[in-house]
Length: 378
Image 1 (tube, rainbow, N blue to C red):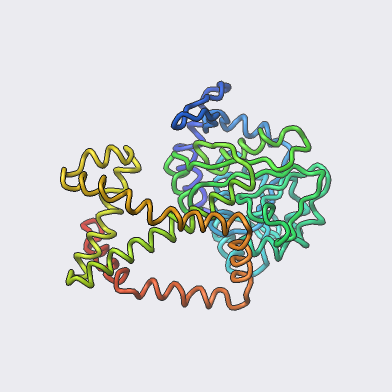
Image 2: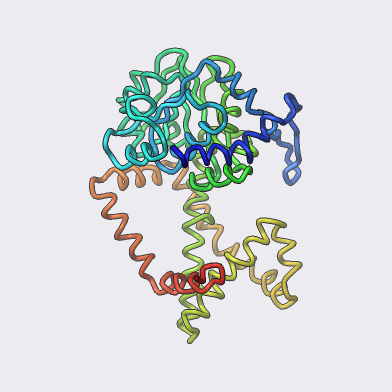
């Protein structure tokens, strides 16, 4: 509980405290994104007192306590919604024990899944995609008329033929999808910042689903939100994860590292030139100022090489991205994911696959390089 109080103090000073002092009303802005006009919703559009008013009569049932469920529920608790949240989990499991350690009280704010869903007027369905499929029969009876069903991913609804997740027609259905891991959702919140998130409305029975979706998006830790739909959210998300966010980047790192090693470069040199310089020096510059700025502030040799070679990488990779998007859109990728993640041996199989990454020379070298960073020296 001491940790909880500390977290709440940090959050209210860094986020909720500032949000409460924000302008009580402001006009949404329309901005040009590369020539396309989009409406922008920001944290300041939903100060704490406005969020509390919108959800004054609600109780939130957070189903699942993985990285998103944990971060979102704790951020909501620190955003003025304390006392309105229950966590629904399998009793006695690892997540149950973690939730207890975070201050959720068994029998009061920590309940079995069905009991939490029965209490919630807003059911926040934050299990894994495979878990949502498996637990839908437990949740569905508690989605009575007038309730709201919240997601942070459009997967289960978009691929309903494979998941069986078909919401009743008399409930609001919406999502807020943070563009990052739950760990980042929580850490940025505690820093007084916020993560970018998308919002989508699948069903608006009450007529208030859009406002409630954006308000809840701010409560869970979003700083800037943009609107999409369930299908586009899941298509872009799955493409990104398999592409430049995780899959493609590992493939590129590995290809360059191996070519350097095959040509006589040491593991230290190959890792530094492939991963360390990218993540520690160049990627932060791109994040802060854009690719053109980073190019402009490199050596003329680096500039020339990058400008000459990026079209070749573009030409080589775009067909792969097109194939990936097609596999996402036709449902094949979703079915592979559900089949794999639903196996009883999933955790064991995953560890074997991660061990291949972990034990590869490139990432073994990376552990040593990270140890040698000045900030990691004891």
